[in-house]
Image (cartoon, rainbow, N blue to C red; front, side, top):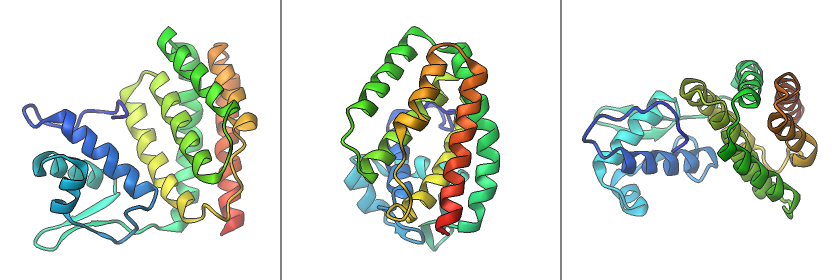
Length: 218
């Protein structure tokens, strides 16, 4: 679970639903479940080790985030990717990512600091590679969202980040590998130092850089 707004009803096994949501979400954004693919609930339930009820709760949440579409009597399908939406998504993200980074710098806790230092160490010891780079990018962004300590902001950013991720994975081999030492370490260090203005500036620069890379690839 990413710490977003709880969409699950009491008594409906929220922990299992959260597990199902996170795993299916990651399967979708990394294209293991490609755009347009049908969701076989029975097979997916068995693969994830969860019952049909928490899986359906998870799918309803994913539908609200436009990652799946549920059609009565037809089934559930992964939504298609609209490449032209990337600029619109980036327009929202450059505002919210900057805000989240600034709030993280203002609200970072002792536990957050430990987590962020561990991420810096992971970046510095990474052997690189596009798949590893994207996993690190995801871990860093979601960590910063958590450090902002605003579940509504975190939930909203998760949504737009997930939409971006699918587009990035479509063009993973064509896009330049993210230089985390250049883009993320200074931002994390600004958060740790409590420098919200600099953290915001670096977050916006990172979104702009990636949006430009995608635009050039397209």
